[in-house]
Image (cartoon, rainbow, N blue to C red; front, side, top):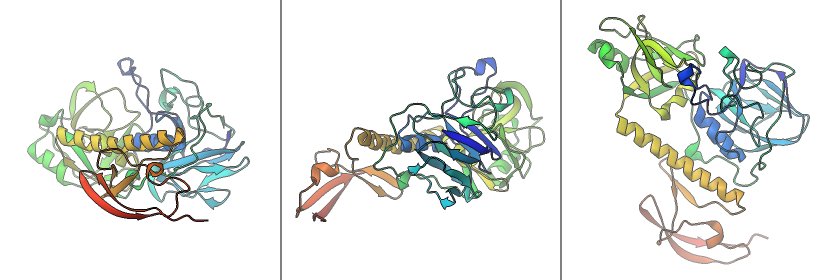
Length: 377
């Protein structure tokens, strides 16, 4: 279905990762910005863990060998189809013979391409993700090269209606990144001055960063004794500080254990921000509690769940439930009885001249609208 004409800087097949094998030293891998891959998959009508392409910084040149539809999510690398600008975060139909190219980063670092059904590569240890250092999974265990051909699994087909990501879920990528962290687990290995430096300094993303770790440069973080510990588990987003005092954030291809002190871990909702940080971008840290981190994750997942309901409604041939956006949050609209409001229930097709007052609730607040519907012939 897709022929690789040019591979780009680092284009790999990724899903949400390879779990259950860290005890054997096999990294989880998966998408660096898993949230963006999930949304791109949902938007095209796939399960959220389907495999797509992770396109890093300098995009590939891809030729489509059959008519299809795709979604590009995550970083805006200024994609084009046959020279024409390609819209991010919506389903775009592509004809056989078309070329997908990228002009370079507009915002963010990693773009995700989702195709109906997901990219068809062998499942290795429960995942289609590529771990290039051990040549595990993905397309022959490596980055894509000219001449490679990719096909897609049989899927339900792309959605044809409501095929645009809601604004409330649209990630925004800038060049200044405030990352919230939970302190520990080796917080006591650092002096008060070292902890103060970590939480008050601005760090620069190094060019030496990769899928294993994002290296940061800036104010040194002072240890009580040294940066070495007996190796322990290395979670996604852990901020490791070796003896140099310069932090390294462990990412998707991190080793399963590490022998350097960890001052903190980035909360799940903010890891994608760092995954999208370009070399030279600025990063600072803010400590939050576990409860605060869980509340932020729950809030985001509620929005994702609402979008999944919207997608399932479209798949079932229905219409989406009505939502409103209030201060960046998407809220489900119900009537006074708590029943979700839908377009067909209130405005049946062919019903002209409807005029009425309607009171609805969203986010605990009541809103009254004067609604008038006219037929457009």
